[in-house]
Amino acid sequence: GLLLASKVWQDLSSWNIEFASVYPQYSLEAINRLELDFLRNVKWDLYISTSLYAKYYFALRSLVEKVDFRQRYNRMVGGVDSVAQSEALKISKRTEQFKEETILQLSRSM
Image 1 (cartoon, rainbow, N blue to C red):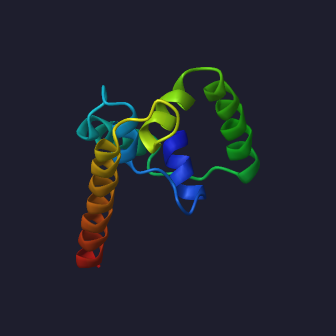
Image 2 (cartoon, one colour):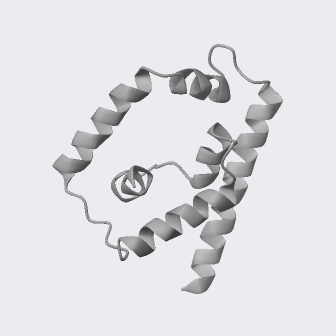
């Protein structure tokens, strides 16, 4: 739910493919299915007030700081203990390609 809320509230939110890169135990297809199931269950009603979004955003952010998420994220984007630069470039290219394909599909459907 928070991932979808960030897509509504943030201009540059995470894409599902980026989430799948950070958490490889979840395939992109699985994340997409979960997102669709969630949307159907909430009847596509994604309204969330600014204050409620901020409340949960900062609460979860503080929890994330306490676990190894920050280390894995830093490795992915080239911080301490970074993955090889070639792997980071692959992730970046795959994300860009996915975004371009999605935008193209959306523009064709209009």
